[in-house]
Length: 400
Image (cartoon, rainbow, N blue to C red):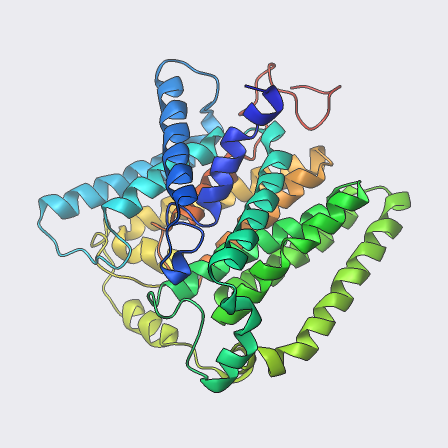
């Protein structure tokens, strides 16, 4: 196999799990194609390959002491879940099921298998995935594009993905906004103008579908990621390049403003939900759960708090909450240190993706959402200690 293609196997598999997971690219219309089946088996096979290589001393997944907080957190969660099953506790099945657990395991293995040399490939894999998604939409469900404004204007209750499930209105926009972030990142990072143009072209349909879902958590995460990218890129680059990036960002901001002017007419549901919508019962759920008596080891996966911090402290106890806080602080410290030592834009893009997932996770879903698991696994890897002398970090002339 060509080495350039071989180098994309793990990043592309990670890109799939970071977006559409194992559900298929058109799962919001309950369409599962042969391509989706092939991708599903390939992603699972790649994860199995990485796991076997690790068992037999492979170099693909390297565990260092910096990964200990993440590993300990995983062990604790598995321990509490095991206790819950042994105690015959009733466990919610909204997202906690066998398929979700398998997806989480695959996502974590792929996340731990990502190397610095894979960062740019991960971003480009997301662009390839965005192009494939756009093509499949045009082939199978073009009505979601060409009749979008008409459908939404007729009935304000219609949202893309609502016919499948309520969770689809949360999962789908997060997958699509990830693709959009990759497109914007590639527009800034890539040097060839044809690649810049292609990166913007292939995110048009994902952006339209994302708006059509009227999801707000993913939208907030998206803008958080854009802000991190803008701030970070000006801190990472020399002054002579900042003017070029400033020009690109002005183009992007003007495009956002133009889109904003069209939102009320073409996406009234999104417009009304953002400006006038309620909290979808989140505050009531949080208030009820805050009043629950805390336990040292938690109650197991019994509750669905729509917030990882609440989920940790209630379902996995005070111990689980402390372990989660330690993991977040440790990974954040290591990431900031890594960014200060390595002026690499693709590293910054990975941080943007992690930020997007973390912010979006504060309002919906649980920790068994595999895209979040993959992002957290990558988050735990962003440190200097995981690299040995065989790995080159961000520069062909610099190694650790």
